[in-house]
Length: 229
Ligand code: ATP
Image (cartoon, rainbow, N blue to C red; front, side, top):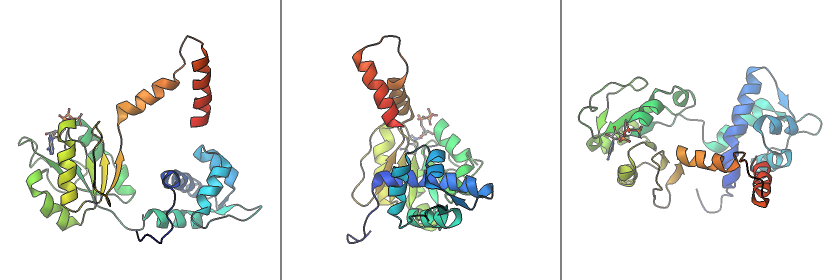
C-alpha cells in the first residue's frame, strides 16, 4: 500500500470481518437497514467503537435509519479486498491441515484451497476431499504457487518446520501467511502474518475461568473479563 494512503487501524481491520458476517446474516433474513446499536449488539462490540470503525470506511449511516445493509457489505468487502477469489495453499497435511482442508467454509468465502503440500512420501499423491489436485511434494511449491497465482499460505507443519516452511512460501511469492503451528514465525516486511495458536487461546480463556479463591487479583481479573468483551 502506498505510504500516502491512510491505513485503517489494525484493530478495526480485525473487526470488519465480524461486522460483515453479521450483515450477511441480516441480509439472509431480508433486513435492509440496521442501526449502529443493533449491529454492535450482534457483533458483541460497543456501539461507539463500531461507529468509529465504520467511519474509517467513510460509512456514517443515516440518523434515524442506520446503515444500508447491502451498501455497508459492499464497502467492507471492498476495504478487505474480498471482491476477487484468493487462492490458498496449505503446507503440512497432519490432523489440523486435514481438518482445515476438509472445511468447506473457505472456498465459500472466496478462499479456495488450490494445493496441499507435504514432505511425507506416504501422503504425496493422495487425494484429499476439498482440493482438486493430489497432495504435492514441497519441492513443487514454486511451480504450483506461480501456476495458481496463490498469495496466501496456511502453515500446519510441526513447530520445528514452521519457520523454514514460512521462509520457503514467502520466497515462492506468498504475501499472506496464516500460521497454525504453535510457535512464533517471522516474516519479512511486506508479508502479512496472522498466527492462530489454539492452545494459547485456551490459556487466555483459562485466566478468566472462575476460580474458588477470592482475592483482590481475582477482582481485577473480573474487571478485565468485562473489558475484554
Ligand atoms: P497436527 O499437528 O496437524 O495434528 P500431526 O500430529 O498429524 O498433525 P505433525 O507431526 O504435526 O502431524 O505434522 C503435520 C504434517 O506436516 C505432517 O503431515 C508432516 O508430514 C508435515 N510436515 C512436516 N514437516 C514438513 C515440511 N517441512 N513441509 C511440509 N510438510 C511438513
